Structure formats: structure tokens, C-alpha cells
Amino acid sequence: MAGVPIVWDRLRSYPSNLSGSCQRREPDLTTSSFISPAKPAVAIIGGGVIGLAVGWRLSQAGCRVTLFERERVGAGASWAAAGMLAAASEAEPGETALLALNRHSQALWPDFARELEAASGLEVGYRDEGTLVVALDRDDAARLRATFDFQRGLGLDLDWLSAAETHALEPHLHPAIAGAIRGKGDHQVDNRRLVVALAEAFRRAGGTLCENAEVTGLAVAGDRAVGVRLGDEVQHADRVVLAAGAWSPRLAGLRDWLRLPVRPVKGQALALQMDAAAPLLRHVVWTGRVYLVPRRNGRLIIGATVEERGFDGGLTAGGMLALLDGAWRALPGCEELPIAETWVGFRPGSRDDAPILGPCALDRLVLATGHHRNGILLTPATAALVANFVLTGEIAEAMQPFGIDRFNPVTKGF
Ligand SMILES: Cc1cc2nc3c(=O)[nH]c(=O)nc-3n(C[C@H](O)[C@H](O)[C@H](O)COP(=O)(O)OP(=O)(O)OC[C@H]3O[C@@H](n4cnc5c(N)ncnc54)[C@H](O)[C@@H]3O)c2cc1C
Image (cartoon, rainbow, N blue to C red):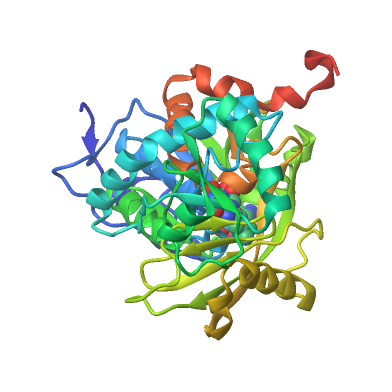
């Protein structure tokens, strides 16, 4: 690749004087170790999976990338998630475009995980046992059959299991369950390991990671974003990527240019600790009430509430009760397990539950937000599509349905 080796102390925007900690490592000269002067310098706002993955891809491509994270990487929804990659099991009516993107990203996941593990030297806990959507009783089974017919009609790779077949796969499920939809392709990843691996891969590719560095506003010249503000300081960049999750619309100055229809959708969740050598579950299991996600280390994640409470970060008795009751109805043996952790996260929910990707009214500001309940699943596709847009200015076909202009009543006719 044509380019010049990184000379960090000569870069004008090397943010060594920020109050937060900036971590950068000399990149591995045998891999993508060159920053091309022809490639844009990029500032990324937000160190969740989306910002990190976009940053990794752009660094690999030779861009000078600085990522600003207000707290520590993964402080937002990316740490709170369950890591399900459930394109098929979660398919709902009226989400045709989103389903296509979800399936595209799901197909990218196995190679993405392998590449990331090689680039970071860290495991991401990718598991491919699949997902079971379980019917707890005969009424449930009748409802689930209708869902199954709808999802199969979309061409999704799902099959129906009898109660006996379901128990053969997961013997600790409640004896009264009446069957299940199996999604063999709906895998999972350990989202916390994913965050750590993405941060490491980003650094190894030459990216500069600034934690405890809150972007307080956009730097704008005319109708163009020219960087980001951190208090009194301006960090110049040729492109700014907004990947601040549920906090994206709060960025000072943004509302002069656009109204970002993103809001926090609160989710309470908890983890129980199973015996890793004799886990109660191996598949991801859904019921109509909760999902259960077993990790290799024996953690069993139970999630999640869906609440419209703004940024209220409090756990509630009702939330925990609903999760534990829902888990117990599917997996009675869980009542003996110790509670390992409880937490709250904020999904970046958009008005139509689909991500918002690409350009906007402010030139050179690129949006990568609004991933709602699918941000982990959508990480590989978002990273590829947004990085491609930054590099080429092209809006790839897969990205076209997800522009901010779909919310514009003038151009969209609603
Ligand atoms: C309980 C729960 C369960 C979920 N389960 C799944 C699942 O199983 N599968 C799935 O695909 N998705 C799941 N999701 C959704 C997924 O977690 C999100 O869609 C995804 O993490 C969004 O990533 P992000 O990088 O856009 O946002 P975030 O991870 O929220 O990252 C945004 C970051 O920006 C930082 N930030 C904000 N403002 C600023 C600023 N001004 N300056 C600098 N930094 C800033 C924040 O501190 C934060 O770290 C779940 C979410 C929740 C809450």
C-alpha cells in the first residue's frame, strides 16, 4: 500500500494534551502499518462496537483515525448486550430491509470473528450451537407455529422441533415445554470480549484511542464538519463519524443541522453463574418473555427488559422479577444458581428500529448510530459499509435503505 510510515509526534492533531488517556501503540509494520496522506484523517465519537469496528477498518485501510470515548471503551450498550446474532429468530413483519442487512451481517460474522481474533490476539467467544425459541405450553406452541410459518416464508433457515427433540438438545428445559423453533444459524458472541478485541485490533492497526475524552461538540466551518471539540480544544479531521449510540443526538451543535431520531431504550439484565463444566444450557434460548444466553465460562445471561425511561439507569424489583420468573419458567434448575451480576444498558433506538448510516445535512459528518437491539449482530456490516463510504463516498446498495433521509417527510412523502 502506498503511504508513509506513521510519525506520531509530527501529527498536528495527536491529542497528547487531552485530559483523557490516549492509547496508541506503534503499529505492526508487517500488517497495515502505513497511513496514506491521500486517505482522510478521521475522528470517531464513541467507543462502542460500532465506533471501534469502523475505526479498525479505516485504520486498516491507511487512514489516520482518532477515536474519542467519554468513559472507557464499551461503557455503553456494547457492554450491556447479550451478544446474540439472531437474524432469523428475531425476524419480525415489516422489517424487510433490516432483515436483509441483518442476514448480510450474520453471514459476515464467522470470518469477521476469525480475522478479529487473529488481528487482536484475543478470543471473542463466538459460539455456533444455535438458538431455540421455546414454546412453554400448547398455547405458546400454536402462536410460535404462526411465527415459524411467517419466518419460513421469508426463506429463513429455521426448523420446528418437537418437545422430545428439544429436550434431547437441552435436557434441563422445563418438562412441559411443547416444542421449539431452531435457528441453526443464529449464533452468539461474547460482546464484552468483542469490545476488548476490537480496541486492541484498532490500536494494532495504528488507531489512536482516547478514553475519558468527551467530545463536547462538533467543529464546523460553513456547512462542513472539520473536527470535534473537547472543551476549548479542537481536534481537526477530514471526516467525523458519529457513533455515540443512544447519546448521539445529545452532541452539542448537532441540532443546528439535523434531528437525529435516536432515543435510549432501557434494558435491565442479569447474569447467573452455572458450573462451566456442567452447564444447564448450551444453546441460546428464547421464550416469549426472556432470553437466556450461556457463555463458555458458565455465565448465563438473562435479558432483557424493554423500557422507555430515558436515561434512568436504575434496576427495579419488577424488572428483575420479570427476568427471573421468565427464566425459571423455561429452566427451573436456574433457581439454585448464584446471581453474578445485574446491569442496565441503553439501546440506541431509532424511530423504525433500524440503524442510521451514512451522510447527512452537515457535510463530512458520517452517521453510524441507531442500531437498537441489533448492534452486535450488525457490527461487521456496519464497519464495512461506513468505512467504504468514508473512503470512497459511495453509498453501497446494502446501505441505501438506512440513510437519515428516510425520516424526511419532504423527500419520502409522509
Ligand atoms: C440489555 C441489552 C441487550 C442487548 N442485546 C443485544 C444482542 O443480543 N445482540 C445485538 O446485536 N445487540 C444487542 N443489544 C444492542 C447493542 O448492544 C447495541 O445496538 C450496540 O451495542 C450499539 O453499539 P454502539 O457502539 O452504537 O453504542 P454504545 O455501545 O452505546 O457506544 C456508544 C459510546 O459512545 C460514548 N459516548 C457517548 N457520548 C460521547 C461523547 N460526547 N464523546 C465521546 N464518547 C461518547 C459512550 O460512552 C459509549 O461508550 C443489546 C442492548 C442492550 C441494552
